[in-house]
Image (cartoon, rainbow, N blue to C red):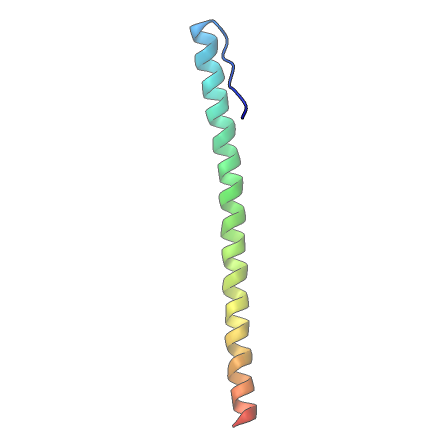
Length: 61
């Protein structure tokens, strides 16, 4: 596991932590966008599967 090394100066350490928080926030926004897109795609796929099931049932009966 990696270790976070902070500068010895308190102000520099604070700035490093703030940059890290900003970077992580941006990465999490990217991940959330990906999850949202995946959920949208899954919803569309489910809708298509339901339509196919209805059509198959109509053909069978």
